[in-house]
Length: 317
Length: 295
Image (tube, rainbow over all chains, first blue to last red; front, top):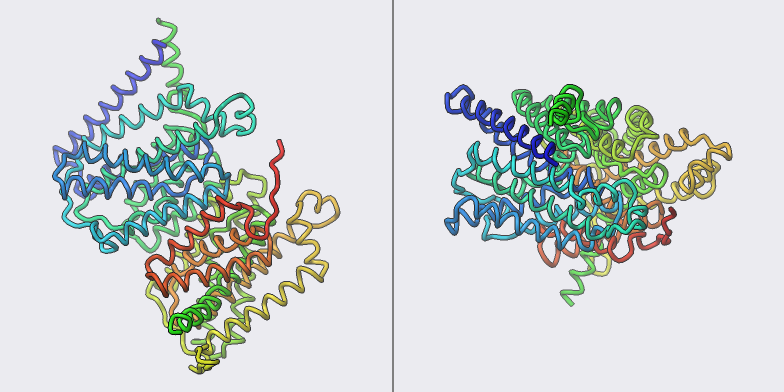
């Protein structure tokens, strides 16, 4: 028990060091505004991919509608801050509650479906959410919501991201998380061992949706305008690709996936005509040569030298 | 009377649109039936078909029928090449890997096409005379007649291939149980390849017909019809050919009714709402049989 806490503490300190370095570089104006925005996006995408990984990777429920929940969080958040003058934290929590409740309501009937059917149903639901938002004049319809205060700053993104990572990591390592992994491995076997599969599937789906709502709230306050076109199923594909690239069932993998995908698309922004072609080819080649993703089921704390370091800590105890 | 008139008019429009969905859905359902893959790239194959038809008509100055045939032939080869290069190496990989590959292929086709033909939409030339027939007060235009007749001819040919030929028998066997079919001496790789070939040709035909119908094509035109065709395939019962046709036409009619009587912005939502209703009420589709899962 103690060793695990210590491990958490070390990862937290490591996280704070990364934060300190990046924040220092931003304050010293060593990073231009383009890359500053991309650092924010990397953080937001990490929240998206880790929360999607909980649904897709750990629980094995193929969801393709994650951008829909993000849209809910984003629109609830901007209405709360812009129209009601609430602080960002309240907006994020409201967004999480709305997206999570919607995830619960949607999950209740759809999670009975399996595999491809669930994938296509969640894709459809994500699109329905987007089309409904597009038809609400109160939030600007298809033209988008304008005049959003620019509230998302690097510390906000970083600490919300850190909270998400610790929350999901602890969930996965709890008995609830183990039940989710059992469902992924074999749903029928899990059920016969007494795991309430419906309950845990909905639990994972709701938590994933809530964090997508948080990410949506942060995303919306990065820009002055958001429009429903940012939340199409292509965006959901993008988050799925981050999860698969990093490794389904690895939090480290989701971080790496979000980082790599966001970084590559930012780096190739100067060649928009080739960007998607390279991206598509990279995706196909990855599936050929490393279908389990960069990390597979591995976490960074399980990798050779780092694991030895942690083991030594444990022995020293 | 006025309402009834508009209703029937929308039904005519819906059936024309629906038969295009049906053509795409046939390819989807055949491919899903045989290798259990939601081929996200199928909508883009349809887009490539539309562009090929466009270039045959504008550059080679041929009429619509040769354009249709040339486009179908080239796209059929494209479908086989895609299968051979992208899906065949992953035949025994986890399903998600193939699905992600399909998404990759889809992006590749979209953006490679965009690179070659630029993202600006093209105007499909008028290939048939602008005639419209007045049947008992209802207007059917030349394009709709063309779509309906070509769709019916293609479906008749497909039915003949699937039901009467040895190839069709092998396709049905492979989609029923690939492993057993292989044990019976059916070369399943060849059958899968031919399934992609036929499915892609049908999608290309749909692409050219859509070009004729709506007069405009662009590199991302395949995304939505592709998804909706999958909805149609699920609605009719995935893997079942008549189901795909019926599903496609029902979907087209509902879309036409929604955009005619409610609002065209809810058109896409209607398709997905139907999908979710079907999945919740009868996941096996209208024509499907329920199968129990075995441990």
